[in-house]
Amino acid sequence: MLVCAVVLKGVYPFLAITHPVNANILVVEGWIHEYAIRAAVKEFQSNHYQRVFTTGGPVAGTGGYINDFYTSASVGADLLKKWGIPDERLQMVPSRVMDRDRTYGSAVALRNWFRDHNMAVSSIDVITEDLHARRTRLLFQKAFGKDVQVGIIAVANVDYPANRWWHYSQGLKDVISEFAAYLYARLLFFPSEPAHPGTAAGPSVHD
Image (cartoon, rainbow, N blue to C red):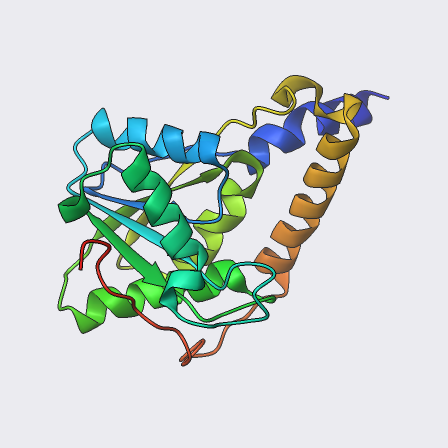
């Protein structure tokens, strides 16, 4: 019983890690819900970030990549604009990766965008939904390598409390699936280089 209690109380904060690294670039995973988008806007407005980048691949239900504007990166950018991020600070960087390894593919697309635009980057902060945070940081770090510090900011879930997630069916589903996905990313995912040659960098939102 003690072990079960420790696991129940410990797994959620383990996954929902927040550890920013004092970067001036904020990366927003474009698939996150609108409450998390609003949190990203607040994070940008209350800190020293100079640029915001959105990432993400084809929107679910479109049957695969159509163009850059049918991607989570584009959807997230539109929502950030709606809630107050200035056009000149915002850049969407879509990926063509769908289904498997989407987070890693999005990170690779962003890494390649920085390289293609001769933008020297030593650190980034990535904002995502809480249970996805540890896996997001891991996969972005795999994509960017040891020369770039990857910080992470987890936005709290509004649908159920983090300290009682096991009382909710959605909480059980989310925690179990995300923990399994993290273990896969940590222990079994070994990306090759180049990871996804089909990634694409899109136009600026204000173009």
